[in-house]
Length: 99
Image 1 (cartoon, rainbow, N blue to C red):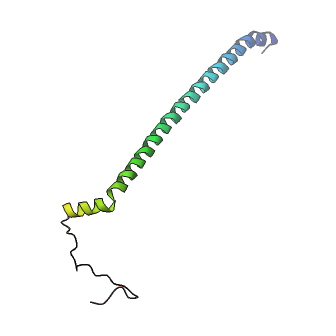
Image 2 (image 1 turned 180 degrees about the vertical axis):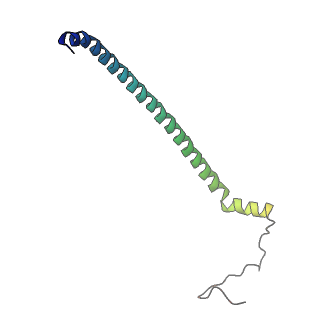
Image 3 (image 1 turned 60 degrees about the horizontal axis):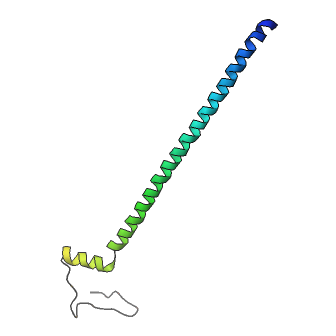
């Protein structure tokens, strides 16, 4: 290419480079904003799951209390309370005795 033709193309190329740089910066800012929203949404979902886990563990603790287990066993499994003389306590070295 001749020097004159190159000088004619240089302003056009500089404008294209400038516009493409600005366009690239806008795309990068949009990507940063999109990633920020994605992090925010993921954080909210994590907090929701963590709160749900906490509620479920509290519910599990309520259900496994001894009085709740006894109440369920009496009402659904027809478990009766032990009467006097039904419970045999073993003490000493040998807890399991041959029958």
